[in-house]
Length: 112
Image 1: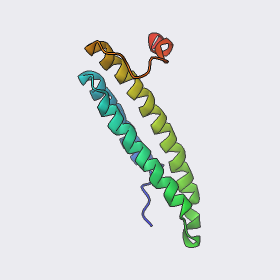
Image 2: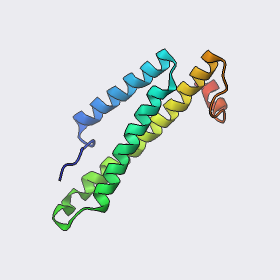
Image 3: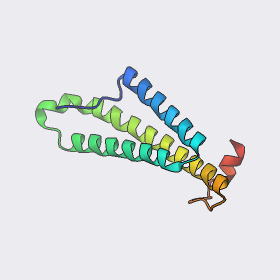
Image 4: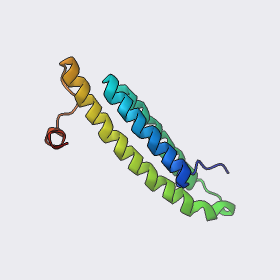
């Protein structure tokens, strides 16, 4: 059974570096769809890991701890990319003069 093990430290560092670089790219070009693509990719990875843990056969039960760690890390990356999407969407809305999708975090952005 193939598992995209993101609990491996090297993979985790590479994914974190790619996430930070894509957030920086989205912020520089002021396009929120770059962050949305990242968010969608991490949601797909989360769904794959949940499906793998749900359909795990008895012979692969030893992988349950690895998959559980991967799911926890997936949630962290989804949270990071969700907030970065909201942040870049706010930047894009201010640059184009349009209304943002969600202004409920204005108090947070003012402190950042």
